[in-house]
Length: 436
Ligand code: CMC
Image (cartoon, rainbow, N blue to C red; front, side, top):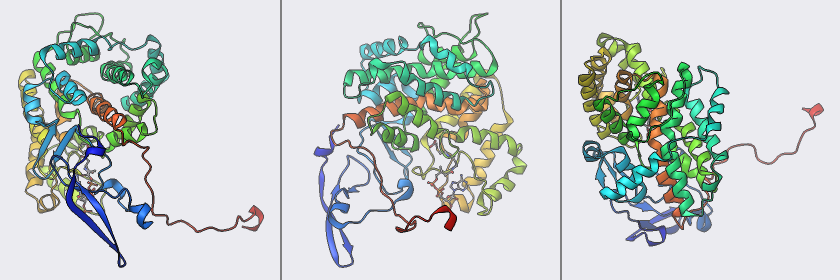
């Protein structure tokens, strides 16, 4: 990866005219994608800030991990298209790729898988944290708490200036997340926690820890294991999305890595982000049958109605999300393997068709995103809707730790500290309470 220092400066300059006073700013070129105007010196030279709530036009960092061309429906991890990775790779391999920049050799992959597998157990005392939650607690509430609590357990991997400790923290997080998520599920249904089993794959282990019980052997369905692994790949990273940016911002102060991941989980939970998979299935079930779809489409278009089509639209993806394409194909495979046919799928297909042919959705470039079909698959596999976002968090942990590592290793890294357009009262004198 090129460092910020080495970022190529294009021949172009951007000129800003502030009431007759002009100022030049360098334009930086990435390897692909839009150039960026480097405004780091804007305040120092002009005394002005830029205003960009939601970062619609702001590149917050330099990154070599993931590239998205939202208009063209392209998603690349370290240059590899998501469709190829979903078809040919495994979640362990994609994790290695995101963390290390290159696809592993067989030996590298075996070593990496071995290491992750050997970190899947959690400290035995951690199980007591679960008892503190109500049985009906949302798994994401538990995940926020328990992942944050990891920061109190693994003191030997929290010196973020040491690359080796960062690596160990990253491996621990990737390895323990399935155990923690499965424990959240087990706690909610009142079944004993299942310990990981090292002979199983990352994904097979997770399925067994979730659906297995100590009373009998759990048989892993190969098609479900494959589908689940692919779902993890599809969620692994998505450049500077809200939760990843949250992890980066939290980490920019030098905070404990486990605590930073808890911050990412908190952000992911929202329905505009990872919580959309749960919301999308709830919505599809509420719609119930294809004949009700036009009513819901009208509601989604009505500015006075807060209802939105969940699993539709994206800040960056302005074309069919390539992850949704793979998700739909995976859904068909799972239905075939399990010999099920959920009528909700028919509703989803019809909803997609009607929305994609509707002028409102066409004009605003609103397409199904990764969350539109995932809930239907996860439901068929047997997960309750409340677990959906926890599964997203499990997989996105890889992206979070890779992005966090990239940030900490970047010599240009500084604490994230946005400015504001202040519109509150100007200075005034304190008024004693009796005189107000
Ligand atoms: N249904 C109806 N209208 C929509 C939708 C939708 N799902 N999404 C966007 N719009 C409209 C929105 O009302 C706005 O219209 P106008 O320009 O007239 O005000 C326009 O499209 C642009 O929307 P926005 O909210 O300004 O765009 P954004 O980039 O800030 O928001 C989004 C992106 C994903 C939050 C939004 O599309 C949304 O709320 N979608 C539903 C929730 C969802 O599926 N989220 C998952 C995102 S993908 C996975 C992930 O990141 O976790």
